[in-house]
Length: 526
Image 1 (cartoon, rainbow, N blue to C red):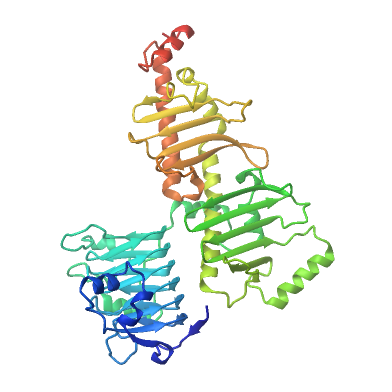
Image 2 (cartoon, rainbow, N blue to C red; image 1 turned 180 degrees about the horizontal axis):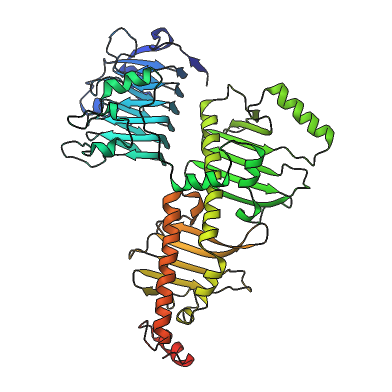
C-alpha cells in the first residue's frame, strides 16, 4: 500500500475522492455507527460528504472539526490503509466533528477527541495522551491499543477487541449515569499538569491542552519512579540499548535451557498482539551471543543481535563496514526490522524507519529489562530452600498427589495450597500452587526449576482465569503489581503452612480430610 505524506495542518482535498456516503457505504465496516445509522433510518446519511483516501496517509496533524481548513463540514474521513500522524489528532469541541474510519493501523503522538466515532480496524498506538470526552463519541479498535496515558470522561465509550497496553489510565466505562469527573483535583494532578485542570469544577481545559500540544509541550505529569524502575536502575547503569546491557539482561541465571544446540538459554512472552523472545548462545558459538526478537501481530518484527567477538576478523570487519555504510542507529549492534507479512526481507534499522518499528523496539527493550530486574527480585525474595522446606512439612505429607481430585489441596485461612513433590521418574519438579479466590481464579505457581547456568531457582507463574485455555505466564513479565502480589502470596502461604504445621505437631487436627487424618495418626502426630 502506497504511503501518501502531507505537510501542514489540514488535509488536501485533491488527494481524496469526495463522494456521497451512499457510494462508499459498502466499503465501510458493517458494524460501524454510520452504516448502522443509515440502514436503520432508511438512507438518512446517503448525501453526507465523505473524503475517501484509497491509500495509507501520513500527516503532521489532523483536525477532525475542520479537516480542510475552510470551515466546511465533512461527515466522514475514510482511509483505506494506515494513518500516521506525527503530532495530534484532535477536535476543539466535543460534539459535531468528522467521523474517522481507518482500515489499517493508526499511530499518533496525542489524540484529544469526542463527538464522533473513530473506527480502527487495526492497532491504535498513541505515544503520549489519548483523551476521549463526552457520550456522543466512541472509539472502536479491532486490534490492540497502546497509550502512555488514556483518559475518558463524560461517558465516552471505548471498545477495544484486542489487548490494552495503557501505562496509566483513568477510564469512565460505566454505562448510563450523568457523566464523570475525577472529583479530587489533587489526584488528577498526579496525571495531568495542574495548569490544564479547571480549578472550579475539576474538568480538563481542552483549549489550553491543545494549545500546549501545538507548541510541542507535554500535558502529562511524568510517571513516578516505581519500584520496578528502581530495580532496573540498580541493575542497569542506563536505559541504553547496547551490548553490555543486553548481555546483562540475558544472564543465563534468568533464562531457561532449551532450543537448538547453540542456544545456552531462552525465554519468551506472548500477548494477543506481541511476542518478546530473548536468546543467549554460548560464547564460542558462531551465532551472536545475545539476541532479542520482538514482533507485533500484523505489523512489524525487530531483531537485535550482539556482535560476536569470536567471529573471524574478516567477518567482524565486514560487519563493521556494513554498520558504517548503512548508517545504523546502534553501531555496536546489528538491528534489523521487517513487515510481518510473508516474503518480506530484513532491513537494517536507520533513522527513517517507521515510527511503529521504533515504538516496538522501545517497548520490547523495556519489557526485557523489566523481566531481568523482576527475575532478580524474585530470586532474592523466594529461595529454592524456602520452597523445599515447605514441601517437607508434616502437614503437607498426605497431600502428595497434585493431579488427584481426592487430594487436591489444603485450605488454610484464605489460601488453597496444593503441592507436588519432585518426581524424577516423570520429570516433574517440586511445585507449590496457591489460589487466593474462592472461585478458583488468580492462581500462582511456585515451581523449582533449573536455569540455563544450572542453578536452581523458583519460577513463578500466574494464571488469572483457569476456565480459559491459556497457560500460566511468568510473573517477571507482568510488571510491579503482579510481582509484589506474587511475593506477598508466597509469604502468606508460607505463614499459614508454618502455623498449621505447629498446630499439627501440637496434636491439633488441621483438616477434616479422612486420608490426611489417617496419615497423621500413623505418623504419630495425632
